[in-house]
Length: 66
Image (cartoon, rainbow, N blue to C red; front, side, top):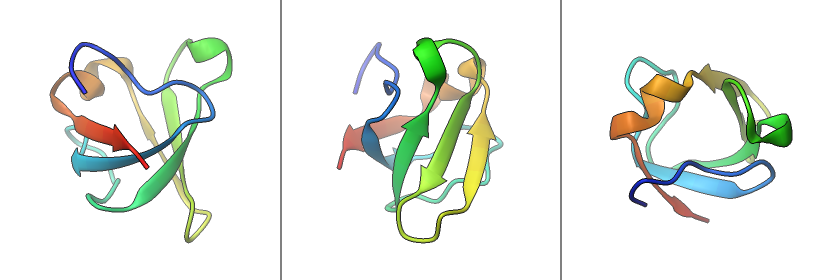
């Protein structure tokens, strides 16, 4: 998606992961970002593990709603 960022509670799948993150392409993640402010926390739907991404890391990421 272009010029947008994932919103709190959405389930997303990355085709290009945020730069420097531990997220995996093709895996579904739930967005945990209360009030849609601050850093992103992505929780794996399948495994329950999570990884963080700063707002600037999302600039080149590509994702779609799962």
